[in-house]
Length: 388
Image 1 (cartoon, rainbow, N blue to C red):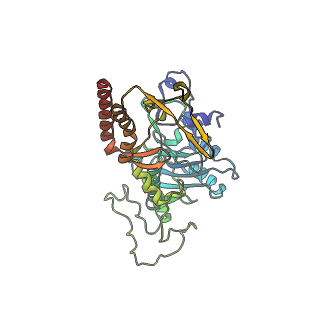
Image 2: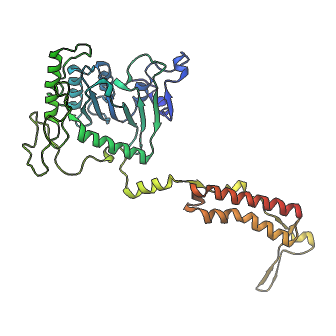
Image 3: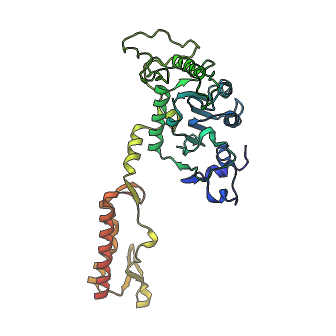
């Protein structure tokens, strides 16, 4: 793992990889994605085109069983993909040795033209919503050279987006993937150019093993060339039908009815009320009055001694204090300017909701109204000063 991975991960904020400097040989790493992900504690997403190089990198990232690193990866497979039995066997070995920290599942796609979108979500702490890495991340992007036309979007996730993405991922896992077992890991070593009848039969046999390992209530894998209609090979069991067994032939537990996998397994656990509050606050912005931008007072204290007076006199138990202030404006102009001076805070209170201290929340729909009111106050203040 790269020593500078932490700094690279911190740079994965709303940018496109690779940058021009790296392409032009002005710095950067030949494999920036792997180095950037080396310090992360949690990694989940969907990856296609996995081969021995990609699984070797993932093994190094996952580390020893004692390390607290967690991964949930959906591997997309299609006829002729480079994810062969040896790669899946390595993935199965990593999963079994991880003591539940790492999980792989298989997603079957029937043609390279229908490849899924590659995406990864990397989290570095328990309260981190994660950073989305989407684009040409097939095989964990272990290629040593970048093509200038390959673009990978790296962007931080907010709480609402992270939860929606995690819910989608949980749905894909439950409804469209099969577990990685010793049977489903036996993917045939096919190449797209073969086009033989034997290859078709091998792939169909493999599909049957994957289909047998899928949850009983999930939609079955659809046909390939052996089933050109694209219709399901087996009908889905009726809701009232009793399951034939609690586990597949390979000992993999089937999904039973009940709550499906939820977002907190992938993102920080969030109270539903907090999610709605965050969604609501996104429709506005924080507003406050900068104390250093407020106009200075329009009058100033004057020492009584300058007028031949005493600031305080005492007679027995009675104490008398007096103070003097001076202003360059007469009383009428002073009152008008003082009203204008205090109006911004009053307008802000009327158009916003309090959050804490002097921070308030301004709806986006009222931003123009606030700007108009402040502009009118400025005009009124200038007019009053000119007339004074």
